[in-house]
Image (cartoon, rainbow, N blue to C red):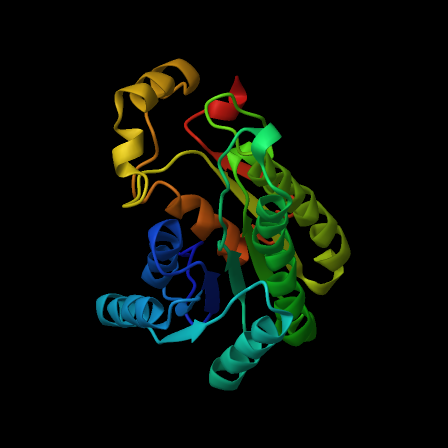
Length: 257
């Protein structure tokens, strides 16, 4: 029988892999046999993640600290992965941030910071991985983590820089898919809705947010741990070779209304 989602022997780099959704997706790919490179700024956290994944799933791992706003550090991170494994098959661009304030009160620095991480950082990582690993190999799976807020606006919490940056990630995905398809590289985006993590649990369980879920989300709830995994595995798999330039909302139906 064919395993359509077998990732054995493949190397997956996951940015923002110190907590939350990044760690969940890294574990999902490891479960399918991929070697995992955990990337984030905090060395001790990614080392702990890499150790846990190696022990739990029996795959090789590597922890590489990197600030994705620095071109030099991104290039060095990719070089370190290539020196260790000699290939990068999958990149999940998950690192991000989010400024929350009314648009009229957002500062220039807040807006610039958001763009530098969520949009320009995503591009820097994709550029380096494509140039050094995927274009030479004529193969790659690039998965950009955008957001449902890259597709729509919202009234619940002002976050215009986040919307702008994630909207940029959505169309950057299309642009890179169009350019790099001839190299056997697919470029797609996942657009998550609200998910429970250690950082969001108390907020999402508040009366206000629970009522918002019942009003705004067809499934009337927020995403649970593991519910992003299938989308990541699908887009990372060799079998998804004719799927590129798409956005996959994983939002309980939020953007269908």
